[in-house]
View 1: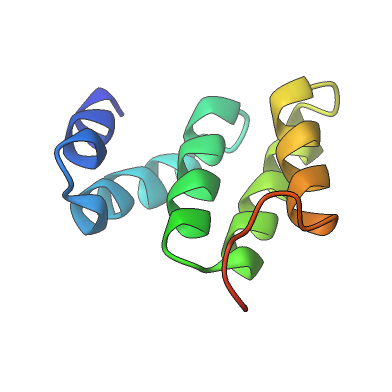
View 2: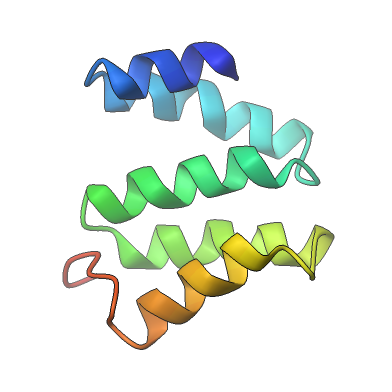
Amino acid sequence: VNLGVIEAQSGSVEKALRLWKPAFEREPWRGSIGMNLARVACNLGNSSDARASIKRVLQFNPDFPEARSFLHGIETRTISCGQN
């Protein structure tokens, strides 16, 4: 997972996604991975993928304040993720 952060910070977003997606599939209770996926999806303009990742985070961590805030931002359009 840390390698995913390094890849994302260096601009290799697709590599980061390839690392985070299977990690989140294996360990969906790890909210930080799901939030990383959501942020990257949003940055790439994919609000539906961002929402899906956040909702999955909240299934396992219903009191995750950052996830709730990010989802609220997407749904109220105070956070822009493109037109998806």
